[in-house]
Length: 455
Image (cartoon, rainbow, N blue to C red; front, side, top):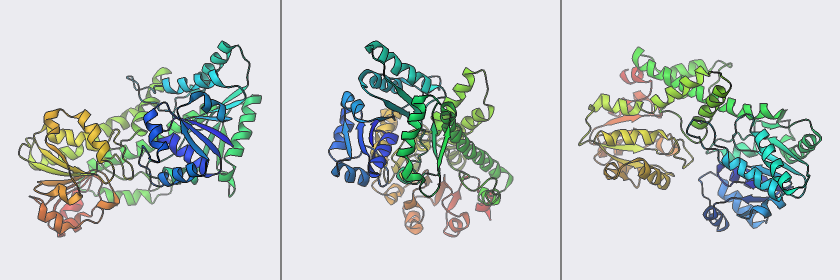
């Protein structure tokens, strides 16, 4: 099938590359000429395991192309995926300017039937606005052409997006019951047929329900994270071990083990933005989502917990103190620094007068870029990006772990202790067992594991 992907960001690039891998002829469009140049020169503008190989293989086979030519992009695909960014607006709502601009371009240049697929995460009712934008352009041209708008939200985890796309646990598609909508359903069924050979993974529904499903899924996962983080903070006070609690409640099949890990708070491009956007949607209908408001508040507070633990050990004045920070990206296997807890921690340490040496296996370049925007030159002067995890520890008063990269799970503790000025570890992701750390001679501070650290 001939497919156009509008937007070569995280969702668009993964979607386009994976659909090409299935044998489709895919045209990826982006208005960012620099990004398109990188892709056409064999580079990848984002870090995602397995993606570079798929892009290279399908470019070589002629099934995947990248361009800034809007008219050619609209002409290419009967299926037009809109996968542009929907950043949060000042009031927390999703900014749809790029989605609607893509829709207007489709209406401006289309000359035959198109299925326009909202792949971007968009608020309920966006399909109606996309429909109106396309219809307005067609009317301005004085032409009458059939088209359909479909909602097909993505459920990709950064760091595992290729695997998620190629082996989905569900495919959600929303369409209407008009003749064009039913024709769109047939085409979408054909497109996703390779994923349904073993069993049916597609959930068909109305468009608004499909749009709502994406927000509901992310809101539920964010809720589980904030719930466990709040319990972890209480566990530190009552003398419980949150890891034991996690195993105890996760064994209940009604709860399960996923997204029950206490930590330093969630970040990235999805959960913070989508929780805010869903709250904003509720306010538009004079509804209050009290649980989600609390989820967001808990997460904002959780990003400060590591800094508070440092202050509890060393006092509020950190002048003359030096800290090693492991992990900068908001999660492993990505270079995404959006809403990363490391940004809150590093700013807090520097503002209290400390110096910091930081390391991340993948996100160093992106971290350097965003932290230069976050920090004043005076603060930035006390931040150093290290060449290795051990390099951060030289002369540090403590090691602070923020991101749970696999490379951090089994370090040389003796080498770490030899380089640290004091054998102190703040573990924001509970990578290590308190008993092991105590036996190795460390003062160890996890999240919700104070009781285990005293045993």
